[in-house]
Image (cartoon, rainbow, N blue to C red; front, side):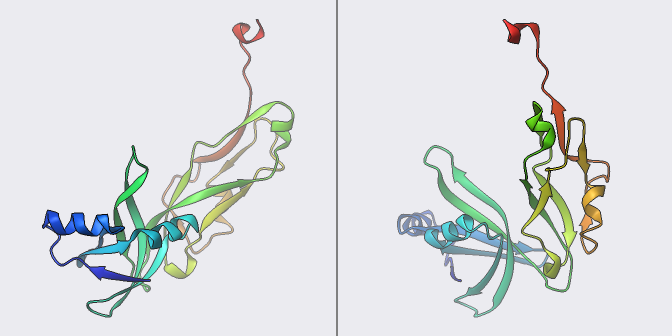
Length: 186
């Protein structure tokens, strides 16, 4: 994907011009870099729809290739429109910190008995190299009965090249009994 550098990020008229032409401003940053740019809104929407969080960019002005992680996307909540994007430049040889989504699969035995699936942890914070970066963590709850839980320590074994930045006894998902009160019975 190619992006173009903003000529003057402080000039409100230019930013408005880019936004009106379906471009949005953004910043690529890390310890040694703070690079403003604009990018096509349709390109960003394609990446978000495909759930791609690692982006390979070529910047037109300096022809350099950057590998970036989407760190933040700011939205206009009333129009559901992207206003700004922040990208974090990744060094291929150094570990970086990221949040990874959890994808729950399967139909739990406990849920079929009347329990509910509780998922208190929606994303897991990790530190890893780019070559070990997972798109998501798949958690199979098929064999979970009421009272069963899956912890961070349960997924450590399959992900030896990833450092988890949560306590190992952090609950990812649990199956709880649905509490019925006297008011629910009436």
